[in-house]
Length: 435
Ligand code: XUL
Ligand code: CO
Image 1: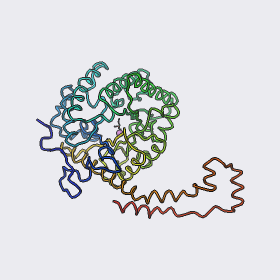
Image 2: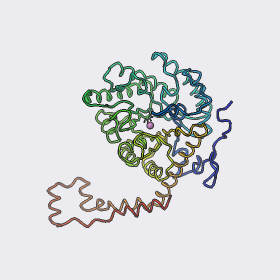
Image 3: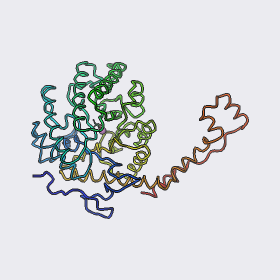
């Protein structure tokens, strides 16, 4: 008996459709800038929120109705849940999914037992991938929920915990490879600190660098060629996470000589917690060839924590797609690291949430492509920097000047050439023309 018997495969019906179980913008086969929407967006459903999220919060227990789940920690329940997950993703029409090791299979009493449980569920995941054609965007290891990781995993003060985490990543890499995963993600989890009085930051950062090198070496050994991704986040659960934003991550990767194997997985709500826009984080990573993938969601600026809501705002998705079209996304994807609200407790809400997110990104893609096709924005920016295209600007860029020669130039000129308006409001109006 299917879990979502009342839902048919979600179809594209166009912007006029009032059917809440249809796409109004996401038309997988539609070609934009020479590529199908499916290939541009590479949507992924996350296992942790969508199939393990209970709706609990610090004030009360879970609310979600998940009739296929018997609430037990058994392998059988995990296997049944895996089949339901694929029924859902298949009906939705998302080409990818992503998981943590501990989302898909129960943790056992020992590492060996956990590995065995994982193998039993991975067998089902593999069957379901083959049955449906759904692929794994990335795998990762949960190294933050179990109390052993209270001080962190790779950055723990306890060397045994580092070793445990290493063993867990070894297995997660094997499983990701087995399932054809195209990337492997490290989100910092508890890699950070609550108080510097008890923290040796130098040792913790060195350990983290070593940990990533161990992962790179093992990937090489087993022939896993997917991209490694670090996911920046500034706070939560620790006060300060070492991977706090794109700039901090890139600096870390350069310091520990990991940039050839790693890129970044940028998440909207993490960007806003860091005091940046998503567009800023994407642009900063992209210009350094470090943009790997995105975790698509949104926060609530009235709430100061990581609310992981589904993105529905066309303005946001337009900004994101302008950057993604500029730098490209594959082998990354648009991964919905988002959860339905606690009050949206019915299974059907999972469909509405994902349909809304996919439509918002499809609409953002079309708007961004239209803006790029008309080229006005680009023309404006090119013109804005034209003083660098010839004369003194071109000479400075070519490295032909010193402070002395620039002083001589300016003594002769007497004053800098007049500035031009930044036209911010005009450009904001221009964007609104497309929305
Ligand atoms: C936590 C978060 C994680 C990562 C995967 O804020 O975003 O779910 O995406 O570990
Ligand atoms: Co995330």
